Image 1 (cartoon, rainbow, N blue to C red):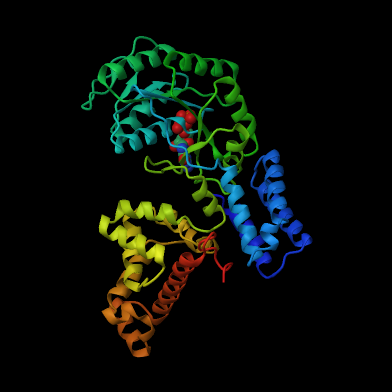
Image 2: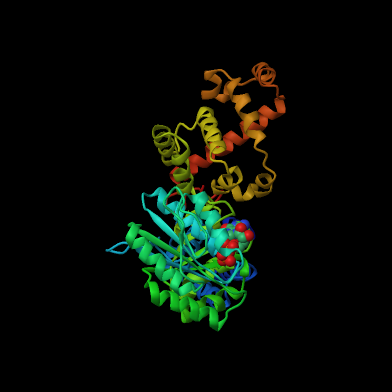
Length: 456
Ligand code: GDP
């Protein structure tokens, strides 16, 4: 996601880096580049204008001319403004004082609502909630079945208007009276109350384009179930249409938050950068793939770091916590935070952890400085981890702690032991040294942690 934008911005900042003091012309050239990069990423024109205006104003101020490292200060400003445009603070889901909390999903057909319903249900279940899914999308053939499949995978019961549906082992599927989506939603709410589900997630029908009848139906369902949250699901790939679509839903149904879907598929991602500031509604979640686990709580600051290729160290640590045991995760977090004593053994633990995390490629894109290695990542082969593991395992503890002692004969021994070549070992050591350096930079960087090559 945001690959092109990220590359363009990183390149722009690289040009700045060679300059000590920045002239107005330097700043104007930079702002122009940023403007072009954002427009090419399909960010709405109004958003681009406001964004570059603020960046220029701040870049020309004392804030930059008085800074020790003006180029870095400009990056920090762009980072701040990106965070602001993405909505500022992370906004958690709001729960009703009296359960069930009702969440209504709205959006165009194909936006990813049904998929999201499953992801959100799974996420809430993991947090100890007891959600019930309601299939109020009766427009699209298969939508009900699709939700049932998704619900089953998520381990969450589905309330659906399917005659002949069976009670599932989770106490799940119930027969609703008629094929009227408003009635289904209302019955779903009654069922959630009766069965003491604390969250109700209502999937509604979308159309291919903005359509008055669809809006009316969504509004009728809204009035029937009085949701605590209306989440507008938008496909990050729809580009410049994002703003008009979002506005139509804001007027037609109204929504309290946004979910960006298909963030994985889009190299541009302009919708993401437009929708929060145009609608004034926060982005709560992001959908990043077709699997139920491809789902994230949306953090504006982390997303900005990713776009600026500063890596997403916090997400990395969080994912690491899931994969490692708590003690290991704590050690790793400390190491990442302090940047000290990062050894080949830690590198190996990280690599093993990464493999457990399943989505290797996704993880690598969160690591600082990895934007520059995007091509390598795209061609990444998980067998690489096996090779790395074999090499590190063939080293003595002393070699792992201090790879500098690896001379020619040690290298041959390690190569023999691991079934690799001296070149493989050199490559691994180079990568390790780069990772180590990155860790050190992160610990120093202050406001702009790990900005590759910019700090020192
Ligand atoms: P709905 O019509 O809004 O309910 O949309 P669906 O949930 O049926 O999604 C439409 C298509 O997009 C399906 O093929 C999904 O598998 C796919 N999809 C949904 N979310 C994502 C995502 O985050 N990434 C990718 N790559 N595909 C997605």
